Image (cartoon, rainbow, N blue to C red; front, side, top):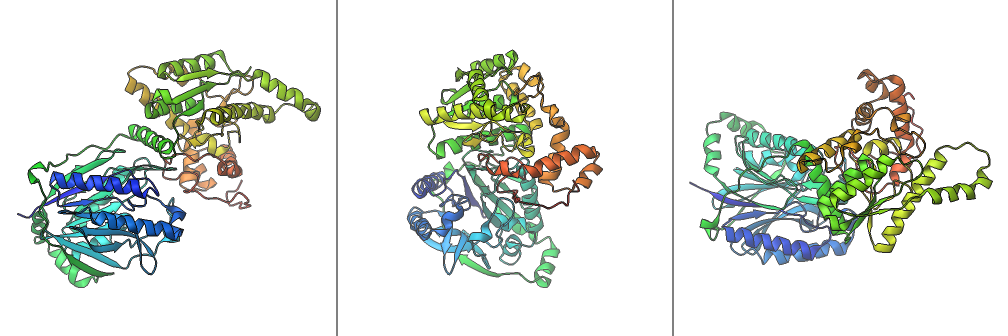
Length: 580
């Protein structure tokens, strides 16, 4: 019986760090060889890091990527490796190199280039025109890249039906949003079953600016069942023994494939590359990985936020972070994520109470800092605020107090946070959530101040879920129950509540999701059962506050449509199609 010992290297690479990425790739090649693997695959553009964006427009960047590819070729004695890199020919291509026993045996160019959501691949790459299979140890293997496998009639079908591939390896850098791991698995299982082929899916892992990659690499049988799976948000070497004879046996019992092969013509040319037989060393050391289950939704989101924060801080050379702790639930969640991710010794919290801050909020701020063991400062802003009002009184005269005075308080706090940042070299973490940022319930240069916005794409209702999840992990109210119980308030004036300005969050958040993520019209959202006046008010606030979102700190993408790369609207805009 034929077998193939496959290794999938789920690694966390860094954009532009050719030396570091090369060293990590080399280490994993050595590990896989020592384990007895015949073949090891690495993620999409693992050599350059993903996404490299406009670095691809620099000729020197392309050249250095090719230089390091040739260095990797020399590392592949007694093993076959699939490496994601940028190929240069008449144009540049998102590519996979097939390297066999110190020789570059073939190159596959990605065919389907995504140009939606966070993707801009048409901006940079030329599309490939040829599908490719190679034969290793008498096993026919197809290789394609990320988006290529999402199309039912795409390269996977051509490789399996016309190229005879018994195994298809898809190397990917597929960004995370909540629930994507499960939906991705369902799609891959469909491709495997429809094409009667073993699908080995390899995803990268880690954070890159606003994007997080969840890993969840997996191998799926020709019947659509899960054979092995890597963990979420962790580097991992997935080892799996494949049995391609099972694919052949299943295919000969399916007459539909014969007819399809005759009557449906392939969409692309196909090239087959024979490779010399390569028996893995130390075969007795090869141990098949098991199946690590998907995380449940709340745990998955919490882990994604941790991953995004850790990598943003470490990859950009920061050591410690600072954040304002108001005694409210948003800053409490960001504090928890920061302490869990970076260590309590690397987190500094500052409480900045004013005359409008309740005694309960002051106590809660102190308590949560104590519970997580972080360094904590309390700097009252009342005197600063009064001095502002005094100096502005000759200009403001007898005008009534309004949001101007509220925003002054927020901007004083922003100034203090930035003073800590400048003096001590700290990264300021903004603590605003998606619900607030959507409707502009935040202050430019105030509570929006920060180098990184951890929960920028997390709705307020999910903030509560995440806090409850963290308390359940601790087995105690490490985030005080009083924070969960109190009515949300910015505390910028007497007896202020968020509901003075906004609908309750359990009403607001579904409206936001329908309009921001799903592009439903006002009339459609009203038809879902929401009050007309509320819907029109919310939509107007969203549309009016694009200018604020453009100036917000980058933050971690969690939903399937985040502000920033995902959702791009003009600030200057007179479109009135929303009937408001």
